[in-house]
Length: 287
Image 1 (tube, rainbow, N blue to C red):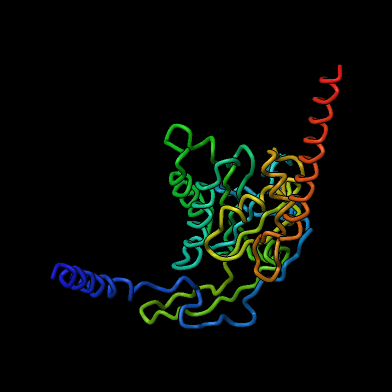
Image 2 (cartoon, rainbow, N blue to C red):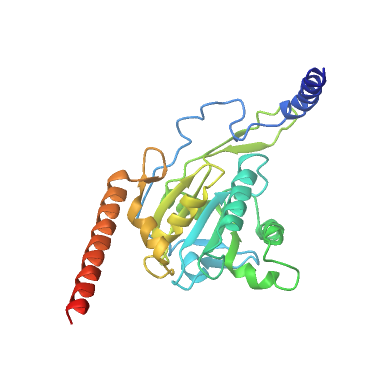
């Protein structure tokens, strides 16, 4: 009897909760258009130098990307637009979660972020507001130290030619079209969701796709892009040895033969050490 009542209670809760999720928009800017148009894609351009590209910072000052970093840390590039009602918010929230989950590498100390808007109608004031909103969401940030973090997570805007230059350089292709929501008359952008990780000198190192970035992918992308300028622990060196980026799955995957090779080497070292220990003991006995 108790089991029956318990099951009934679960069914009632499901019936109550389900309609609440039914009205939520899908995690895709294309909304009703699935899959997105063929023009909306990413042409990966690994190794391309982004340092000479120019945008506008949160104060309205023109800046080149190379002036926003010191060449010592890898940089994450996040293409979004700030008034995006769907995918861009999910992308930035996913990046925020990845920052919070990453316990070894810290924003500002080990890497930086440059977010830019590909909507030319958005300006520095909106960028500055967006920057403050996301910095305040970081657990390490409070009202007394927020300005210390501001140089390490930048929010940029730009004119059409600036936006075109950076978007073409990273192979980021999107479309501007009328909203699919009948209640809205303004235009929206259909675009991919991703972040790009660059080397400390702003050469593209890795693309991470989607709106959620696993701890392994985020950590390894930073480690790989660091080019030796980001500190490596023994575990990091093992990770780089055992993992390889899979271009089909678009994520880092464990390579079985590398693990087996590493295991064989480790076993060999242990065996040699054990034999050496026995030999030393035998010599001491004879002595």
